[in-house]
Image (cartoon, rainbow, N blue to C red; front, side):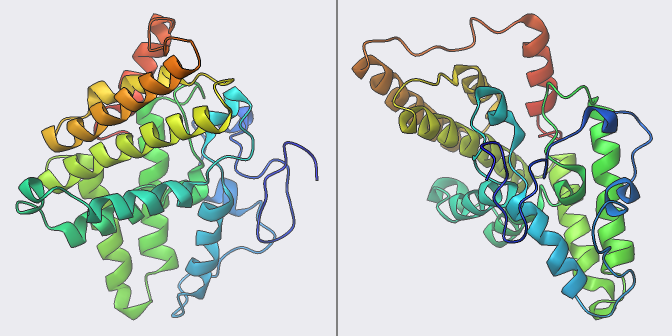
Length: 263
């Protein structure tokens, strides 16, 4: 297997899930990706099986942010969403009493579903926030109105579309919590990769997302995690890097990308 190949449940494709620069223009549509698949999902089927198969792409498409640090066999989109869903179940009681936690768990499992076709767009990919949002909206519309339209009367598809939109709008407490959990999961993965590479990889630029966490309960988790990170780096005889070395351009891109409603 090539060292940069993506491990999948089917045949290995070295470029699976990687956003191609030719795809960063604004002519993108769900069919841009669907037309490249060996077998396109059957539209308007009464069976959910075509949708189930499409979800495999979330299991095999890697989260892109880590690739710049040569972490080529990192987490998938589904890996990220699964841990997020579990985290929502451990919501502190002081916050849980004010939330619909079942919705939060569903939202965590749905929020990146559009990436099954869009891929994991990162701040350095040259795709604007507006264009990223358009692609994801078009994909969720395709899933709800084409792929799942005739499955159980279209109710499950419409429900997923509504939950996704609530997350994107980021106005409800549930959506704000899940946005914070999204960032918390990123921070967890950041320090886990640093430890796995025994301090040879410094992912400090991602620590900046901690400043975008809004709810006190999740802020407390993040503070505990960053304290653990500092202790780890000190055990290596180093100070943990933060965001000091990041260019203003990168800071702006991160702020746009990780701000609630866009992450």
